[in-house]
Length: 275
Image (cartoon, rainbow, N blue to C red; front, side):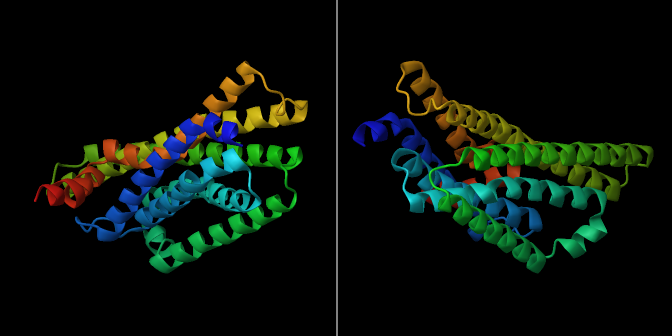
């Protein structure tokens, strides 16, 4: 047991790193020093942050100790993270393409209902999966295909968003440079930046999650999971670290790419600490 725990010590470190970052992000959402986080996108990003926080908190322990309760918590949070990413994509698609429908469909109460539904379905999936402990290869293969499908759907939505934004940009270029047009151009620029950031997170999720799931599926089918070889241990440790780094790094990506997140963090942590 101790050898297994030491084997995944790097994953425990990544988990602590992710916990700290997500807690700081959620505090920034709650405090909201710039009063800029009261919108549907923020609620969905906060939902993603909560699920990623749970994965960073309980996932490394589940990998090390394989407890049934940890299996349920980890599986539930994992079942929320991917739908959360595609929900953000759908929200931005409606915001850019159908702004009036977005105002109606993405109101605060409806967002809460949608997020609650995701958690209920994820909890049901996790409970069902825990009943067939240890992992069944058939279930694992379904999860792999479902994860790939969600990531591909997210990519398609972002392609459609970029096409719509490009059309709007060309239309603005044909008009005169009035104050309202400049304001709209600034809004579209910010929207593009946010969309590119979430697209980057989706790509990182694809790179981190899919190879791990495929490798685990292949090894489970071939019966190699119980074999102790150096090459196999190195590969599993690397893919596991990449998997958890995917969920731990999102707040850092927001901070590096989005000015309002950087400024909120600065006002909330650096300036207050220096004062």
